[in-house]
Image (cartoon, rainbow over all chains, first blue to last red; front, side):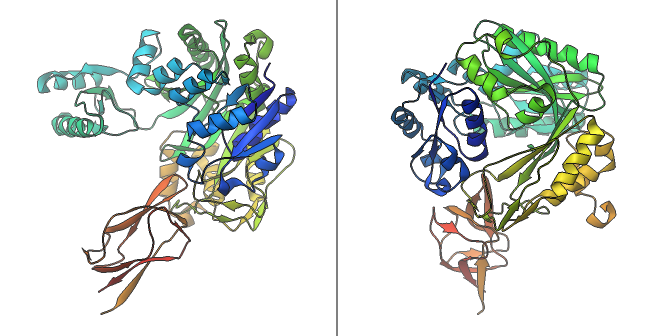
Length: 452
Length: 73
């Protein structure tokens, strides 16, 4: 086991990882930029090392500064948390070259999963359910035939793209040719490659992801799913597990299949396979995240597993059967809300000093935050103020706990999205478990008065 | 000639200055782009006019409500 881990992250993530280090008797060192010098996590660490300047490029994303800090801390492993360098294959290589363990998958695995088309090709080869798609398009006639075969609406996608750039929808045959021309032009400009293909467009899917844990000895298991359909502009806002209103045998069969595929890849740490679900077409692979997820705590709540502890022990070479208690069962229902420093109407970022920061506590409530009253939320990093996680015997109980907890939260000095979170939690479709990624848009287009 | 103060609605860091003093702007033209909490927020001309002053520089931190540029119209 490791003696000392350097956490290459900040705020709530760093505090969370530190807790698992303590539990395992491992020393925890952190790094901090000038903007973060007075945050709680810096004081909580066994060793805190100042690095660089406040912009992330010159601190948390500066690989050489992080490696130098790890050496100074005499760390034998680096935990990247999520965001920042957590999915950077070059960083994983540098850590290993410096004689330390990168707590995550191999650099090659990060590369394979990080590049979307490569990840899709690998997953397809291993039998992962995929959205129906065409071959690369070569001519207009062939494109028309492929689109008719898939069924409209279709999405024209760059073959070597990412980040949603150059994806154009075509709702009928008339829209197809201009969509292909536009997508190919955008793809050429953004990625230097005009090749495009078609995929059946799922208009309002659910986002359902599977938590996986795997060891360095060829074993993998799943820790069930998380439904993250409540998103705004591809940013997750509310996550829950189990996914509501889906038959358990169906979803667990998919989870088993995903775990078997991940084991076959030679994956060796915790990770998440994100999928889109829609009743007509079932599950389709979206992407794999080769790191801890922001929303890992809801899985911890229902399975009683400490995922960060598991991740560290797996990185140290322990066997999956020693790390994760089998067979796992789901106990109750857990739901997480992300409290962001942004105004709840226009969603503009709202940095500032937390004049009041009174977070809820109580039965079944867990809060993860990197801030305390008096702290300044700076513009340099992400807007997450806190995650509030509620666990209850069933979905209704968990929802009640969460909405009660959010109503008891007092934050001043920055604007925050709690009014928006409560609108979602109070929405009739949400309460019925009728989720899809279009629901927040629907809620936001309802005038406030009518909604109340 | 009236002077128009262009204020930032949010706190952030000046990422890019997109125009120069003396430029004739129409309403909604981007003057500069702020970065705040991993989002890019354009600061736009509130109405048509000529950019007369830019009061900030790239990488500078600005506060909510701060005047970042002036225009004449």
